[in-house]
Length: 90
Image 1 (cartoon, one colour):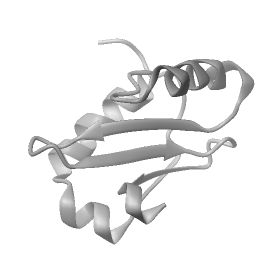
Image 2 (image 1 turned 60 degrees about the vertical axis):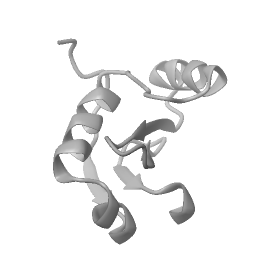
Image 3 (image 1 turned 180 degrees about the vertical axis):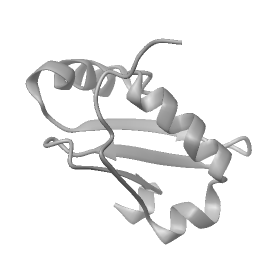
Image 4 (image 1 turned 45 degrees about the vertical axis):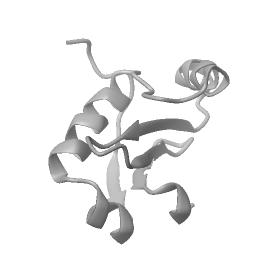
């Protein structure tokens, strides 16, 4: 397993995300996110995330639960907080 590429810092989740995504799926996706596996992002977002690792901008990942429910993980540009949320929560 590769090492973390950045700090997640404070973790928060919307109530909606907590209701729809299991704890296990959240933890597995956070592990992927912090290692630079951006999940199901489009190629442009993946490239932006790769650049963000050096230029310090926001990181955005897209994942799906086992039943194909889409959710997002966003780490703010200042790396102060990482949020787990549903697309409709944005």
